[in-house]
Image (cartoon, rainbow, N blue to C red; front, top):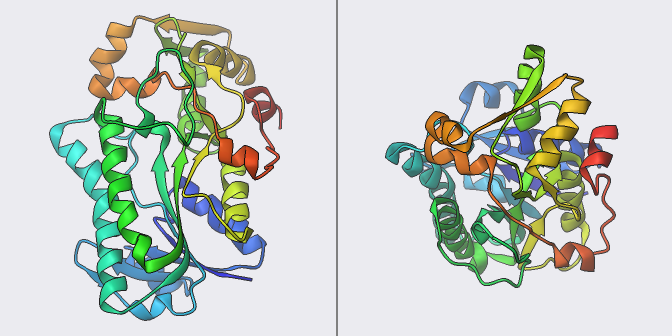
Length: 298
C-alpha cells in the first residue's frame, strides 16, 4: 500500500483514478480548493496555490504525487482571458509545489506530472512517439510546452519524474461522450467537415490502469504517451457513435460553421494526430480497450 496524493483530483480523471487506487487499498489524499468538502471528508486536504496555502505536513510519508491540475480545455471559447486561465491553472500549482518542497525540504519518491499529446501539434502524415522532438506550432502545442517546462522544475524534489502526455480521454459517463449522448435525443449526431483527420484517444479505464501500473513499477519513463494502440478517424468515430447511441442520422456540417460556432477551439474537433506510445509497449501493458470498437462494446 502506498500513500498517494492527487492534485487536481476533482475532475473526471481524478475522480475515476481515486476510485481505482482506493480499490487497490492505497491511501489516497486529494488536494482540494473546496473548503466544505475538506471539512466533510478526511481524505480531502485544503490547498490554494493562488493564495499559496497548504499544510506541508500533508506530504509526510508520501510515496507518489500525481498532479492533474488544469482547467478543462474544451470548456469556454478561447478568448485571450480564457487562454491565460488555461495556462495559469496548469503552471501556478506546479510553481507553488516547487516553492513548498524547496522551503520545507520535501522530497517525493515518484511524481507523475500530467501533460497532453497536444504538445506534438497537428500532423499531416507522420506518426509521433515519445522520442519525437516537439516545438510550438499553435496554441495547444505552446500551452503543453509551457506546462511541461514548468513540470520539469519538480525534478530536483523527487527521485523519479514522469511527464504523462494524455490523449483524448473517452468515458461513457462524463466528458465528450456524455455531451454527445445528451444531444442524441435529437435523432442525429453532428460532425464537421469530412472527418479525415486522425484522433488519438484512450479510455478512462485504461488511463486509470496505466497510472496504477506506473505507481507499482520500480522505474518510470521520463515521458510516456497515454494513447490507445489503434487510432480512429473522426469520420469513423462519429459513425460508430451513431450506431452506439442508435440515432438514425449523421449530420455532416461544413467546417466554416464549426469555426464560427467554436472559434479557435474548433481545432479540438479535427486535430490531426497519430500518436504512438513506445514506452507503453515496452511496459507490456495490455489494453482493456485497444480499439474504439472494444470501448463501445464493453
